[in-house]
Image 1 (cartoon, rainbow, N blue to C red):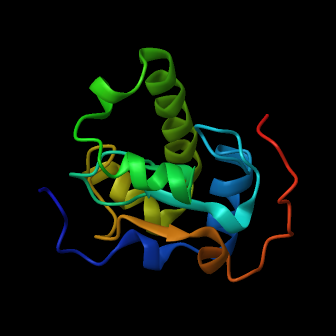
Image 2: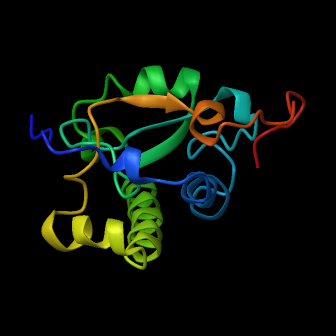
Length: 141
C-alpha cells in the first residue's frame, strides 16, 4: 500500500471543510443509493490503496461501505459512468481545497489520492461534531 507516514490531512480539516464535502460535493447523500440519512452515511476511501483525502473519498451508507471495502479495483467494480461522476466530485473537492493554503501544498506535491490518513472510513456525525436530523423516512433521490 502507498499509505503516507506524514501527518494526516484529516486533522487539518475544519468542520466547515467536512460540511462542504458533505453538502456541496456529495449533496448530503450516498453516492450509490442516494440515501440522505446522515446517521447512516460514512466517508470511505475511494481507492483503498491510497490514503483518505477529500479527493479520495466517497460518501456511502454503512451497508454500502461494507461492500465497497471488499472492492479490489473500482475500475472493475463500478460502471464507467459512475466512475466519471465520482472523479468529477473529486475534481470539485480538489478545486475547493486548493484554495486553502494549508491544504494546497498536498495538492501540489501529491497525486490525486495520495494524501490523507489510514482510516478506511469514519461516520459523518463524528466528523462534523453535530448530530444529523433523523431522516429515516427519506428515500433515495
